[in-house]
Length: 387
Ligand code: FNR
Image (cartoon, rainbow, N blue to C red):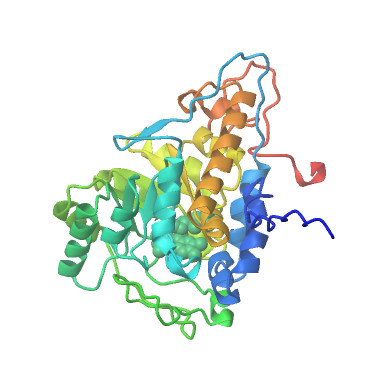
């Protein structure tokens, strides 16, 4: 008689995040699991997608200055932003329609952010109500506002965000109209039946490249400040003039952003706009930056050029698509651990110890105060002949 065969355990379900070692690994995996329309929605930019490429390339051109023999224990990535302590200077940027990426949508994002100890900025175009998101996890949340057509409804929405525990409002000011999002148009992006955006009714319309948003002016900024006690940040500032005006308008912070290159193609990369904004702000309010942050070294470069923190968009959406809450957490942990390594390798024991001297080349208009006799460098990076 044949001896009974040892029961062979079924193969463990493969961990979809198992081989992910950096943020770039997630995009192809997300592309495999997302419906093509959703992938095009997330990955696309405006028009010819030049700024989309520049957002990443501009970081790549900035060179870092290493330091050796700086004994330190693990670098300290903690920061305090608008009075809130955070584990690291990385936030999840507001992005729409998370249930297109994963059935748990914004609930998974909130859980993933809380597990990683980072703040999550909930979009007005959330596909999950604010109170449900609040119930999903204890983490820090802010609210991103696209004002509604009537001020009273906008006021109630901000009050609802405050009641749901959001600690700041980011008013998106760079989207009076949506950009020419040709990839979205070609993919005929729309919300499928069963998924809706309860607060946002400018529903994406692939047939119309210029969907109108509620027009805004500086008077609306003053009005908004008058109807909420929450700190107000402006998201989508790229110029020194607008940043200075925002400070005069009493905002609590500025987010340097080109909307992930989804609106006006051929505006500069966000990181290229940061020095001008930092000069105009002159330390009056904290500056955040998003657009093209893909590496811990990118975070370091943004801090060196005057940002208090960065936000990421697409990378965590790909993480959400691939691994739900765990995918979101993984993205933040990878970026944070790369930031820790970058701090150690540039000899900085903490985020607070980062300044422009971590850069190889002086930022525009700001000498690094190196010993005299050193040839003055080009603004950023090697010339094309060196690349
Ligand atoms: C966005 N972004 C965005 N911004 C905003 O203020 N409100 C929103 O609802 C959205 N929605 C949105 C959806 C998707 C799919 C993307 C990719 C982006 C812009 C976002 O907040 C952020 O500025 C960029 O995503 C940052 O660039 P990276 O990290 O995606 O390169």
